[in-house]
Length: 185
Image (cartoon, rainbow, N blue to C red):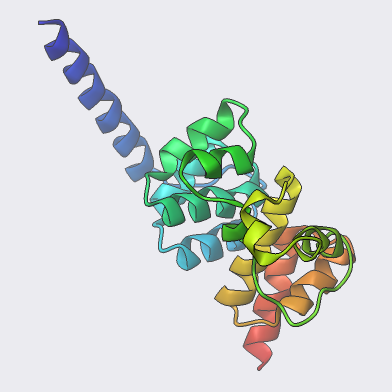
């Protein structure tokens, strides 16, 4: 009988969540809407899913990281978001799902500015066979995943994203800039 009630409660929670999303899949005020939309398109995630994730974990630069790890590990993004909410580092979460620092590496022809010189320097300091053991900080993971997302989604040379980030631009502003450059081409 207890299992019945737990199951019924679970269905109620799912239905309530679905209803909340259906009745107004809106992002919180002040959210970088275009950035979230581009992330959803790149990772092939619906607006509804993006809204649910953002409401649970509103740190916009982290959204692509959660979706990247979930996609690479072939696990539901909710597992990744929940681990992050519990305070786990991005690299620890990746390792829990059999990923490593090497999975975040994006080959580039040139490394421009900080923070990318530092993170690419970590990879350059060791042989490629040791890349899985490279110690990445959370900001390194966020920078590498956003670099990959923006350069691949907009077919933009990675050095352009690096230059904008080195100039202190947040990722939502970088997304707007590379999207604008893409439209001009």
